[in-house]
Length: 308
Ligand SMILES: CC(C)(COP(=O)(O)OP(=O)(O)OC[C@H]1O[C@@H](n2cnc3c(N)ncnc32)[C@H](O)[C@@H]1OP(=O)(O)O)[C@@H](O)C(=O)NCCC(=O)NCCS
Image (cartoon, rainbow, N blue to C red; front, side, top):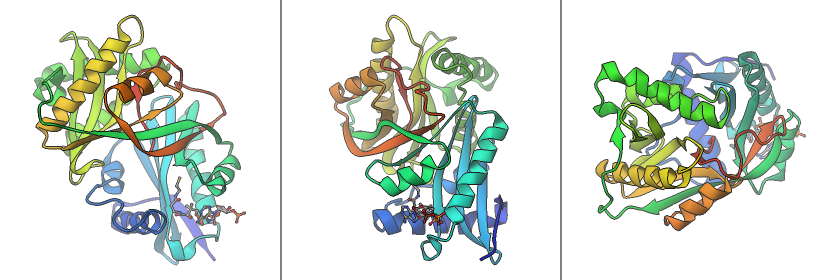
């Protein structure tokens, strides 16, 4: 079988989305993605690269590589089910690793099924090694959530760059070079949600990049804190509590009935604070790192992400 692997073009995105839904609903059940949107929105973003595999000119699979400054991850990875077991996934991961290496991402990773030794073995061949569980958690919203913090979309455009730079300073203080400005831009440019900020008006102490509603990574009735972090140091626990509460307020205001988020359980204090705040794990996945180093998964790091 002749497999061609190359960056996906705009004309291929619908087919890649179809393969993605087909592959994951085959393993996770029909309708798993509901009205969420992931392939198209990430394809449009500036900080990602989507790699496609083509068989006889048709999209047979794809994976998305995401750049967060010095950190990069791949996923989702999907191959048309009728073509499984013929080396397409292997070619895609190989290409994704080349992209990550080309970007100079010092800390690389992915999220996969915790209970699947096939997946672990598959990725281990490329130098990704299983680390801690990443818990996908959620909690219901009551509608009585307080309005806390402020939102980037409410800030005058002229003042946004300084605040966004402040967000990059927060992540850089956690892991040198970690930079999610691409996620912030994607949310604002594509109208996927908002960025919730806490702290001094000019200097954010913490921020959360949130998706909300259909056509985003959240889906109907849901808000999703795709990334959130607070600057480390004294008071970080209280700041994290405020940030999570601010996300709940944003989510309720956006009409969501549930707030979902992900946390690596190696960030033990953040995980415990989420449990105390009423979040419960819906599905545990596992994070794999290349090389096999902890990155920013440290006990006192108050950061939410899940690399799905
Ligand atoms: C996982 C997936 C991308 C693999 O794609 P593929 O084209 O079948 O992969 P390959 O043919 O290159 O197989 C590579 C290895 O993966 C493993 N593998 C194959 N099919 C698999 C499956 N359905 N589930 C788990 N592992 C599988 C095998 O161990 C294989 O090793 P081998 O070369 O010794 O046979 C594909 O099965 C898929 O789309 N699955 C559903 C979505 C998914 O699980 N995505 C990854 C989530 S992190």
